[in-house]
Amino acid sequence: MLRQLLFFALIMVSLPGMAQFEKVFDARMSHSWFTCDANRNVYAIIEGKFRKFSPPYSSSLSYNIEKEGLPSFIDVNFQNQIVLFFKQSNKIILLDSSLNEIMAPIYLEELGLFDISIVFAANDRGLWFYKPSANSLTKLNTDFLPVVRALSFNPYFLPPNHPNHIVTYAGKIYLNVPSNGILVLGQNGGYQTAYQLPGLADFQIDSKAVYFFRDEIIYCYDYRTLKTKKVYVPDEPGILNAWFFEDQIFVLTKEGFSIYKHAINPLEGN
Image (cartoon, rainbow, N blue to C red; front, side, top):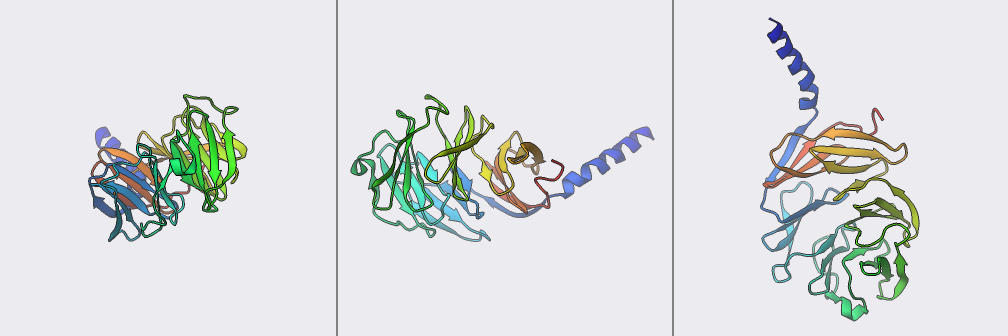
């Protein structure tokens, strides 16, 4: 009798967690790279093509990169100026929201820039370039003229530490440095503050929190109160990453991605 009571008690404890997610979409794909943007567009590299899936995900757009190989850095912060950077050839391809080329490919040599590891879009349609040997950022405007020259990060971190992920949100640049955390910069690169969140591979940010996935958990870090809430993601085998949105969670596995509906408040209980 005691065993039966314990069994039913376990079921009652487990039900709220089981019931908080509802799978609303599932797609199988063999991908070598994958991410989401703030507008819930999904981007993946599949069999030599850079592909974009937009809600309701029934179809996709594609751009052929088979001849280029895998990009060394991809920036999808601005869907009308997607940046594909191929370090091996020092080539930059800019795509619009339909994955059409905005202009002819750009080569770093043409810009007088060398030893660049990251290229990402600015909110005024310019481009930012990170140079690891100088540990600095340079910004070019739409005419490819420098407007910010060699902005040094040495006061905040030193090589061989370097950024690996960029998020642009509400006019600010969030620069992830795994050894240190997230540097928050103004639109022209000026340092504003930092979040002590070391060891991240990537993250999301909105007006409420920073979100990052680790060990089957999405951590919701309220950067105003400095408190963190854990969201345990739906149970799927081989989860590689997950993204949190106001009413949905995207779960990435080796086999593809799934979307779950939820009603979780990321700040509740903080």
